[in-house]
Image (cartoon, rainbow over all chains, first blue to last red; front, side):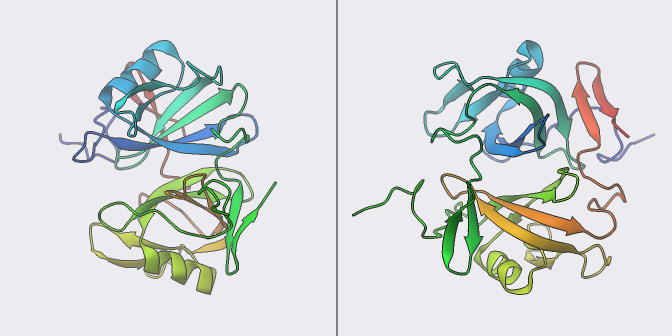
Length: 120
Length: 120
């Protein structure tokens, strides 16, 4: 029997033509969405293996162990896949700031008709 | 004075080479991440204008008013931009199921060493 991608228990991440997929990172305690980054196969494997969030840095073109430099690591409690397996969700315990600006989340501005408005 | 992209109040969404950026959709009440989809400039404008979530359907290659067919619309309470303005977050009130499989969220499976495990 063939299982559809929506029902299969086989993890078959669908990467884009650069071998990447988007990852949403959410604080497991507060439910806050902290950031969106990208992962390749290696970053996902490292995340599952170590329990710490790994991504692919598109600007530096290298595996990115979040917090390796800043100390702002993310302990990954669960990794979830979406229905068509082209996006992941990391549920994490964040140490320090998730955003490189020092803010707790990267989503600190609301889009309004009059431009961006800080939310905190 | 030049403001950095991280501090500006000017909304200048950074699209990829297909004119799209990822949108994370979160239930405003429960904090649940419901789905990730894509938006172009028109989808963002329509969302802000109508208060209902619009995306760009990559498979159908058309503007996608979520729920127009299924009735599973999303009332958008806030649109947030991330630090580098290449991702948006829609905070919504979801009517019915967010996922096309009929589940409340697209993220209904956990990635484990033994494959995917349903979470609900």
